[in-house]
Amino acid sequence: MVQLIVGRKGKGKTKHLLDRVNEQIKEVNGNIVYLDKSTKHMYELNNKVRLIDVSDFMLEDHEAFLGFVCGIISQDHDLQQMYFDSFLKIAHLEDQDISDSVEKLEKISQKFGVDFVLSVSQDESDLAEALKEKIIISL
Image (cartoon, rainbow, N blue to C red; front, side, top):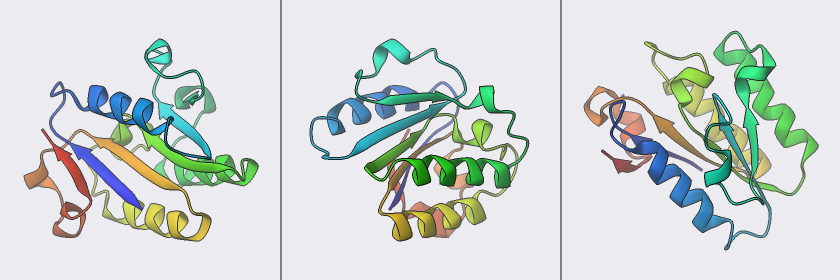
């Protein structure tokens, strides 16, 4: 399953994402990974959550990002959830349609049983209709 937290930059999406991660760590049996563009939020996350600073890995486009995600999944068979803060930036999808990438994440989710929650810096009205059903929070 892929879920979206959407809203323009500065609306508080990261706070909602962090709150959700820290709630879920108490409820899930598997592992949780949090991808971000820096380690800025390291101390706001429960220490059981694995934080990965994507900027360390020289990813150049959204295809490389999806390969990176698959690599993380392949090395952790207990992985249950992944959270992507600043999704447009870390996936190199700024000013692009994210529908194709979200659809690929949905397929990955179904195949490997990993749920994704994405923080997307776009207004709900700017998203494709197919993505609107995936929105859990709109700010």
